[in-house]
Image 1 (cartoon, rainbow, N blue to C red):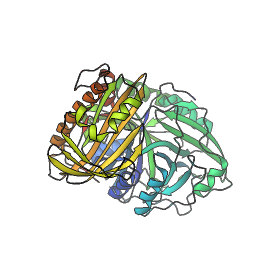
Image 2 (cartoon, one colour):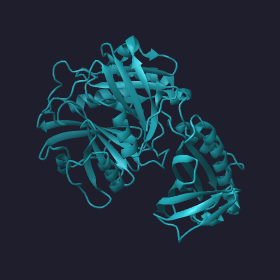
Image 3 (tube, rainbow, N blue to C red):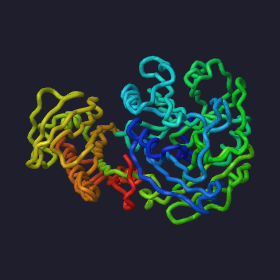
Image 4 (cartoon, rainbow, N blue to C red):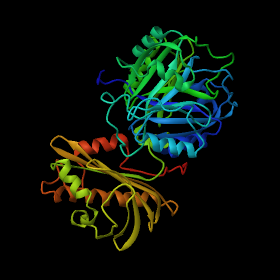
Length: 488
């Protein structure tokens, strides 16, 4: 396994009957963040996708990675066609998405509440369980209790979220030829890692199947390339279009136009045929490319300043404050876990009515800045993190916060993330900005209160390396889009 840099995958795209419903499945069910919506149509969209006369809604969701999105398309024109009735994952195309979830049982419970039940019982022992669950259109989503790319994928930039896309499986007719084209054309890395064993085939109904496999990694996502020997994979049916229901494609992502153009030329040299000249419209540069067997990959360079318009920033208020401290994690955690002593380092007048020691399920009342709120601790993982929700008294709804204490050399990195919805229209951005300042001041005070002081930063400001992380994820104050398009 290699930790060498490579071109990242930054998207997997799904064509759904009801885009809003499917996007909510990924947010409310798997625990991703909503990232807004848009509409695409006309000749420019047709030029990129090679779909005749397209009119479609796009919805987005974000996982724990900083530069990755789940994209859901709902085509109004042309009407999407379903997969063949006897389709199997051995047939050509993108077949399965593998998602690592922080809490396996909680994820299954949320999905069951949305009407999605696993095809089989989970396989594997404690900490190693896997199971396949259908999304609202029957697409295969494999849940992983253990991160299959632990140790080689970049660290998460949104560790407070519950889900990370780690694997996309594609069934091809010629494994070696496809891997050579993809590895050389997009700058992916071939990894010596085995993501599945023969017994896992029964998770998606192919018990006893035989296949050959290779893994190409792009950033924090692995493209698992499989060639089935038994049963043999079949090509797409006559008349197949990208707008048909199912997984459409994956995208390789770039933050630099020079890199995009470099790999666009490489892709063509390796046998990938673009649908046309790259489309440049200011907020992104994009083009789809196909190989000789009809497999499609999107090449996408979104502009950072336009992330709220292209689904790479949350569409709900999402605030992050981070602070480095020279104090070791255990010392920092002792302060963080003592909410009653929060006033000493946060600068906020706090009074706590607590029924007992803190832990998962603890409910307490807090008086902060003169107002009483009700809080429930929903996760308690000392000395690493705790999560809480405000259940009453707050002017905000769906208020979820997490505090992480992360080892950083001999010291610590403290991260406080909050997401919420405002009950008053159009105030989310203002509230988020004010809350971010308060959280940052509190964490700076916490670092000073340990007696060791903030590390490589001044009071109330991020250190340079933490700020760089925040800029990459664009989550310092990520809130409702200026376009007003949001979804739950």
